[in-house]
Length: 383
Ligand SMILES: Cc1ncc(COP(=O)(O)O)c(C=O)c1O
Image 1 (tube, helix red, strand yellow):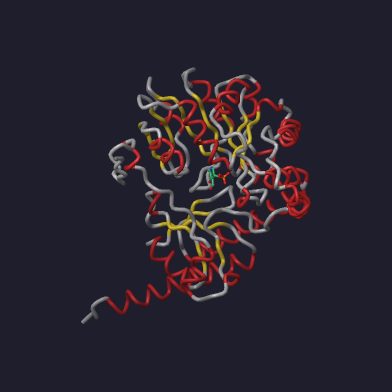
Image 2 (tube, rainbow, N blue to C red):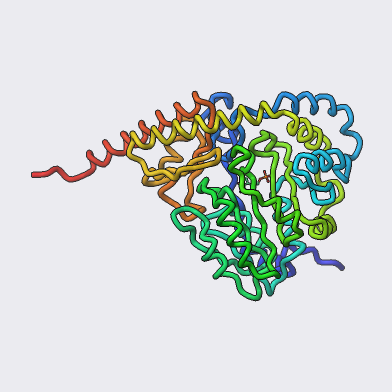
């Protein structure tokens, strides 16, 4: 007789230690809790595009809806060709994924074993740590310097077991960037056995003249993998589509460890259309740049320390990030508390529309005034 047991004894022991990624709170969740209409909730917690998707993407999705009984193009041919043209590379130097998150995991599949370690900044995008834990490898987390990646420190953190260095540039959650000169210097000193993953999820938010050129390393056949996404600037986070740019041999490795149809049809057509909509990208950049200026000026007035950002989010010190996060939720606003990133005093706020940004600042003012009054009330009277 077979005995079916729910015992976890046979599982990989390190899986139990795996933390579960805590995403930004969904709008519906908070709307249910407050008994409010979801349309009244402002979500600025996951660095999505406040303008929404390009109208061209929406039209392309509508046209493709009646074809979803067919499997998608497993080779993502049109999209890789369009990207190759845009970046002046060959389609074989691209691999599409189910968000750039999937590419981070694929890199792990292709390169990591239990004897290896990764090097990353601290704090940086949490998924690098999750993927390291998934493959049970060590993490050399190198503290940022003035909220920026410390590339010299990262070089010093490399040892003979290091397989991958992750550089989130611009970095999430700080919104800071290391420039091309610093990257060139870093690449000049890098041991040859290391794969550098430049996670450039937010790069298109920068105007092209200030985007560090990392594509040149792909052209030179260096051991690099650039990660890009359609979730941020292109407003397609809900469709899950991102990609890797790397020398052909590296793309070949990543292709071996992916699922055959990892990118769905609607994501493919929407992304292709988004690439053609330069106006939407320009409008997004303008919205973000105005929003960042507004937040910076407002935080200065409120005397709150913030980290100057080049992305569509901003990190601000509000004393207790968790308390302010909860207070803002009661005012129908979702931001991101930063305790999971080791920054318990901070919240990270995605740049929204002008109206949304103003509501956030009003809600922060109200919350901090209220806290201040409470502190005064609680403190013992002076005699
Ligand atoms: C630095 C960074 N990399 C990757 C991602 C994941 O993006 P995607 O939606 O393409 O999986 C994010 C999302 O927040 C991010 O901030």
